[in-house]
Picture (spheres, rainbow, N blue to C red):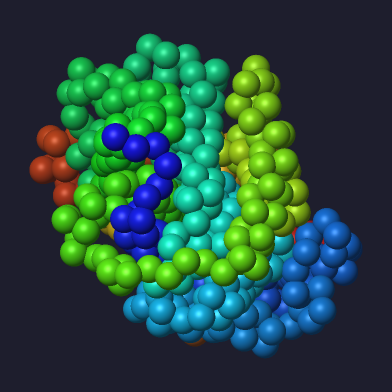
Amino acid sequence: MHWLPDVADASARLLFQRGLALVYLVAFIAARNQFRGLLGSRGLTPMASFVARVPFRRAPSIFHWRSTDRTFLAVAWTGIAVSAGALVGVLDRGPILLTMAAWALLWALYLSIVNVGQRWYAFGWESLLCEAGFLAIFLGPADVEAPAAVLVLLWWLLFRLELGAGLIKLRGDACWRDLTCLEYHHETQPMPNPLSRWFHLLPRPLHRVEVAANHVAQLVAPVLLFAPQPVRSGAAVLMIVTQAYLMLSGNFAWLNLLTIVIGFAALDGHLIEAVTGLSPPTELSASPVWFDIVVGVAVAVVAVLSIGPAKNLLSKHQRMNASYDPLHLVNTYGAFGSITRTRDEIVIEGTDDPDPGPDTVWREYGFKGKPTDPAQRPRQIAPYHLRLDWLLWFVPLSASYAEPWLAPFLRGLLENDPDICSLLGRNPFPDEPPRAVRARRYRYRYATRAERRETGNFWTRTPLGEFVRPVTRASLPEDRR
């Protein structure tokens, strides 16, 4: 049994780097595909307006230098190219300086996007990618001995991630303590996937088993990350299996995938080589002194910045998914401290009737992932992230127009704005824009097995009334983007 990483754990480093490159690739592709409608010059919350009012010291980003759509596109494509190269192993045997520079570039580019991303990038998996990406800078290439201290910092990240998620549950909703949360969560989570309904329809005793197993993975296994091998690998495997289960039952962007990737860093290198066949060069060179010094400085910085997040874990007023520094170097994590018992959805409709009335025919807009059409099977989206669809889940939890992007979104539909309409799954007005749009609120639930056989629908829904009354371009609030 051994506690510190050994030479064989270079395999853990290699698997972690390949997995992180995959997550970066997905993240940059998602950013490139959605930025015009969300953050572009005609987007719902333009980044140029944001950088004009928020100083660099609060949100460090290269977009403070130039905040044009072309700059964003260049950043996204650069991130795609470098992460794709890392994924196929281009960086594995490069010089240390080149490897560090490439990983530093990926971190700086994605941090720049997150720091101007506003509500669209205000999720825990964004900070998690920034923090894991920062540590990757100091891991070195495949033919140099893996820095043990950086691998330990990855264990520390996984510890805070999982334990933070477990503690926020115990301190939050009572259903986590009485083991009933998953009687609701599979149905009410922000974006169900094709199997979520199947998980929801499991017998209640199995839901209790699910919650209990989750508690073990998030409250017990993290502590064992600091035990000697093979106990540490056992704890990591338990967390990896739990995250794979979550990937099967829901769409949580790359949160689960990235957690699995970080878990690779805690696995025994011999186990990785036996299972995957992935291995570094047989002979590893010692790292140069300058590299050891740089790694030591980075470790010291992370250690100091960890004080706040560590205190947060012990606090009765634990914060969830918070960053303690604008570079997102060390963060707090947590998820679903409270569970909604019912699922309300906002359905957006439009009409070409110039004077809407009781007999007006309204047509529904479709989305790429968010439930709207009861007959539409939920789709597998993760690890890709549909930001508009995800934030629409929060809208019925607040008052009308509480989200600052909602009025611009409706205006974009009334204008058939191509950038905003590109975020949709289906535009019922492809040729001419609607004369009016409205938002209605519905209560959704999964169809029972009998209802599914009878109607063919995956959902049943009940109207709850208007959420936003019919509006036209003239009646919407002034566009202040």
